[in-house]
Amino acid sequence: MALERTLGIIKPDAVAGGHIGEIIAITEQNGFRIRGAKMLRLSQSETEAFYEVHRQRPFFAGLVKFMTEGPVIVLALEREDAVAQWRELMGATNPGNAAEGTIRKRFAENIERNSVHGSDAPETAAQEIPFFFSGAELL
Figure 1 (tube, helix red, strand yellow):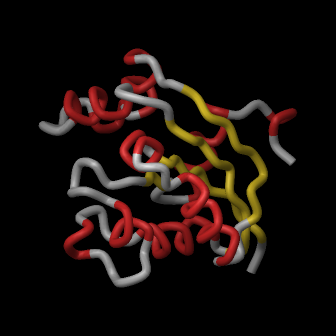
Figure 2: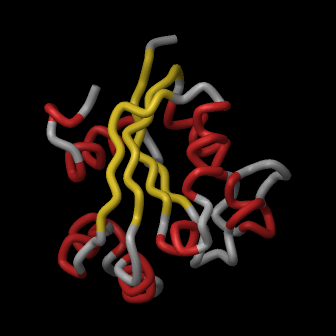
């Protein structure tokens, strides 16, 4: 299996909760290499553009409000089968349904404030990573 990249975001709830170090440690312990990382504060327009695919969904406005309430950490992650492996490590969107030991089971507050984001497919990752990182920023 070839190396693959995915985007991870440590969301405002996990940043505010002081979980950045723990989440990064879990990520590395599970075989991911961090190829890019930065802390930033998303604007409303950036957040709307990033989550454009969800614009017509009822949770869109709440998602934008949540993602702009504080800083986030964006990560370009690499390993074999990175998209699927990151999604498994994150756990179910609803932390009540997430498996023990997953990031969301450990740190998420609820289905909306769920600690982390991950690309849902390799094609999505190929769009999401350049949204946050230029080629020169990735190792």
